[in-house]
Image (cartoon, rainbow, N blue to C red; front, side):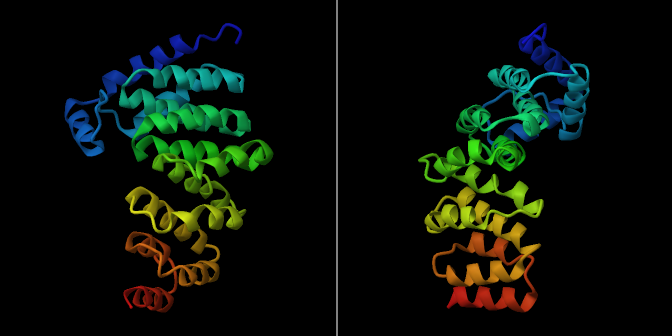
Length: 244
């Protein structure tokens, strides 16, 4: 890793973040996320500004150095450090290979909240599968059948990057989502609907057809998200079909 010290870089980011927080925000966010972590009370825009500025001070870092930096940040049980770790991995994602998803998976398992999981899946894993599909998809496929619902949620949210970029992996979505449709876990139900909502922005006909085919298995949470951007008459028809 040359002269780069990931632990020192992590301490530097934390030192910059701490004075930007407020006790009031720290209390509010800790309560909102129902978290046992320490909170500085720093807003997301400030956190991202600090991380991006720190990254600019370390130009030319290789992907493994960025991962080591993120892991060093994550190690301490402080919300802003963990959020900054996700941001570092997001900045590194275009250069990460599928092997890096082992670290992403570990962090997902340790997260226990959407506040980190959604970025790790959507921004990091979602980017990796686009440029290293052969190395990344086998691991994401395994996430879809994992016992940990946060890991299963991650398999679904990994698809968002491609959907928004115009390359939706509809077979992956179908394979992942169908076994999860009857789950009672809110965060899985919500994720299925979230992915359907994003697909519907470009292909509402596909979403309407898929939703209709699975309407009897679909939770109300999933359906509400799925029909959000469909034409009103289609959304009303599907909602009425589920009520029947």
